Length: 68
Image 1 (cartoon, helix red, strand yellow):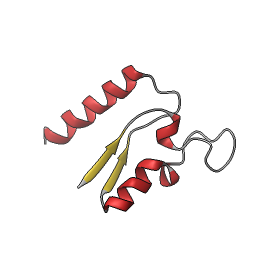
Image 2 (cartoon, one colour):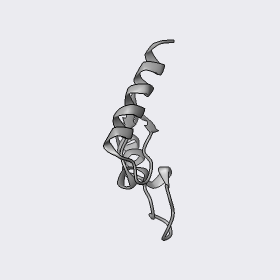
Image 3 (cartoon, helix red, strand yellow):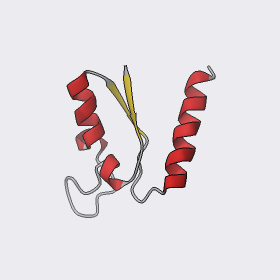
Image 4 (cartoon, one colour):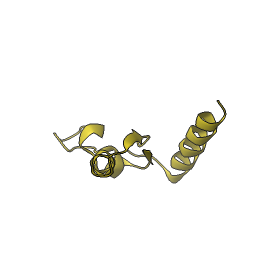
């Protein structure tokens, strides 16, 4: 199974290791949850991401994943 996460700085793990850090995907909550569930993790999040970006990139990921 795959856990797909998308969102803003909270989802990409910004500033988890040091101030000003843009992302730390390996320590962000989606990776932790995926590990607990024994899933693979795809994290599409980006610091400062808008709701429009989340919808656009999630939709694009789904279309690209299932059109193969």
